[in-house]
Length: 309
Ligand code: GLN
Image 1: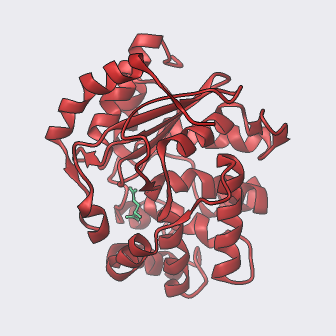
Image 2: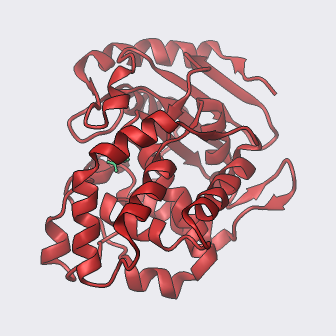
């Protein structure tokens, strides 16, 4: 069903868009550097299938770190909580998403949470399957189920661009391999991880995923429980405590919702029991969160009283 354009959302996008001027598009993954920094779009997806939107709604973007919460859900289903949390922790770091420091100073080699790169790499390592191809396909099918869109796929260009330049992520992998938290070929893991990060969609698809998390893993339109309630609950808790990296505390105060951002400028938000939010605004603040997207969420949260707290 196409999204209805909404005047109320348009007004909020108009108010938030000037903030994009203060941000910068990520270019450490060269293919992401081509985005238009002024873009800002939002979709809200309700459990009855209604959808409202504003902005450049047809633009596709890659999930990047938004994928971390989805791979976590899959791995919790694949392996169970006991296995997963022996290998990745539950605590925020207060450090940038790509930092290596706590791998040495906290439990050696064990990443503190699944929302930072080190933790997400261990999570991706745990996706079950006999080959990179099979593991990727399982993750993609899971995402296609949540978006109800079997055409969702990944951007080969973005995946390749990150694969060719991901020296820091390789360093994180080798550090963790030394401590046996990773025990596969790092190049194979980087192949899988960069494809995962390059899964591509528009705001509408992303808001539908947010809606499934908001409904505790149930797709009310198909009647299918896509993930167990407990898995959705754990994912949403991580989104609150670590979803916006080292801006999660400020985000909890200003917005107060489970949300996950990515360096493409995507943000997935969930309002439990009510709706999912998909945002795209590629201009980022210094911590790697969409600057216009954060402002837009702040305006939305204030206007509709969405904060959990
Ligand atoms: N693919 C990106 C990386 O590993 C994801 C990071 C992000 O979105 N914060 O660097």
